[in-house]
Length: 214
Length: 362
Image: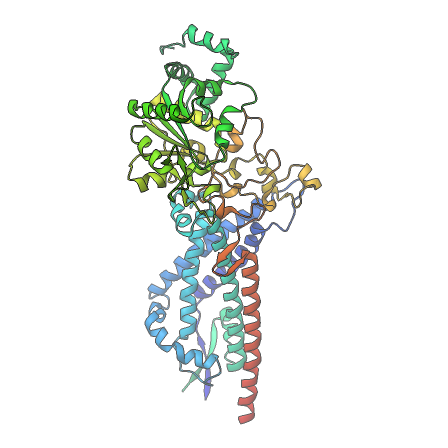
């Protein structure tokens, strides 16, 4: 069985991925600070102001990143991979993948780009980004993008979740879901690289992955 | 000025009660500022108040509450112009402060109801469980229903009257609801001005009444029926301690040096960032002080679903209540995080086992 290097992630995909990584890292760090300010400011400076500033900037990056990713999924210049995210198809294939991960089977079917678990997880993350953005926007008192009065436009989110204090809780808990996702995501790519020796982990840096040729 | 000047006679009447002309106009100026009107409106406000001296009747209903709002109204440190405006209003019926009692007082209420055209001020939540809240043998809900119809304006004052407040807190055995909800339940379609605070800020009440006397209409309301002019911004955004928040200087403990320095109360559970009210600007008791100035974190009494969704008052976020579980958001996050880490470790160990097995087979 020969393996050959395949160009899996074009530059656009890698940039989009790393922008998202940085955005999530900044959001989590600053978010923890806003939740419970663990650095005390001195006589001068504005720790909290800066944290909130970077939190907003990273939030814009996260939202715009998702919009760009949706565009990439629909545009043929990029991989045009929206069909890979079909919920019905992926749900049908899910047992095969779960059986592999839960040690029932030692092999799994070949999937084009994302295995069903992966595709569903990424779809879930897209939904999570939307949810976190909505709750975040409902807590934001400024003008989103400079012209959307966030507090007014997203008050329905607060109403739906049972008040602004509950929106805060949901916003905070959704961050934990991101953290858990990141943990599992990194683990799985390391696992794949270790077990199959196909350079999965390095592929998000270099773009190249080893593929079986048959 | 063109507008009708305040008559000498009227001001003399004020001076007789110990209020100087200057003070009266100062009050009119403050009210203009409160309502967001230009100073050109000051004579108009003075004239409107003078006109009100013809006593537009007010019916003040007391339901399930501790009468704190009545207290706030009548227990000013010294008589000021704001009190007098409310004195000018003919408070025809108020169970707590009226001299009449029993049958006599019910007759007054009946007379007011028949005459109509009064401003209805409601204090206290409305019990909806039969027999849990009655005055003179009548259900409070029925009293509200019959008094609401002939009123020209309905103002719910205090947290209890607006959304139920403390009496409606869990488990709410009397099934108390706010006035807006009670009227909806009773089938009365009428706008209610919600002045949600515990107790109501008398200056808000004066502001709404003057606004009504001046323009003949109720102020613009937000989605909770609260006047936008008083509930348009969060306490946090206008807080006198905001600079400390932005700089990251917080009180960690009561009795600490940080507290003495007047640092931000965010970590002491201040609900200012999620509470909409003009408290920092208007303050209480003739702008003497207010909660945060006095060193207490905001508990969010101006908000819908207070106090249930704002407890504990000294926690940053309210507890998460799921069936059988009551925990802080921090705890839930930490437990989920640890569970994930354990899961990953277990999977990694099992995977290495599988790799070894595959290696052995080769």
